[in-house]
Length: 278
Image (cartoon, rainbow, N blue to C red; front, side, top):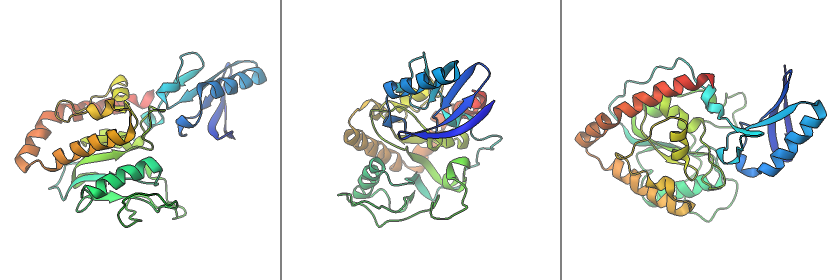
């Protein structure tokens, strides 16, 4: 078996040549950038070239067709033998790691800012290179991963427990917030391993995808109807409402909330561990 990293027409993938199969593994890319048609042409090209069946693995469940394009999430294989935290007294209501400042993320960050939800909470964002017409806090505030630091290992490969142990919940900022893709990444997966409650600022119907993959979400203890909202800005508005509700819980209310969702946190931790072999 041989493996080679290929870049072609804005698609980056691993080319895996096996005895009877060619696998194009595009798990690490932004899968809303290309179409089923473009991937099918690619698999047909490699199939003819190597005279064997060629398939493509994608993180975007919307692209899978069960013929030559198969859904596979790279984060299923991440993180092993991690012990969940024993949580301390909370310094922050939530942790919000924006990471690299893509447009969808900045819209979410801007809404948090104008709703006064960033002050005294744990958040991060990298530098903004484009001039977006948004209300934004002073940037950059990088606490998780600075790409300008050469030799710094990529933050998706590790879980820094400090970002979880002192906050009640995570507001997970996924890579994009579109309806063209339906995927989740290590950003969400870390919460499973840390047994951390979360609200998900991600693609349309991503919570639905999590449930399809065997995970449990937090309904009815969090109103997760935001997952059913196709329009990004409307979805962000509903997410903000749910963040405020969690932030406004008293200590006693939070204790009861955690009792209510404890089974879900335990289940997701065990299910994440079981998916390592997928």
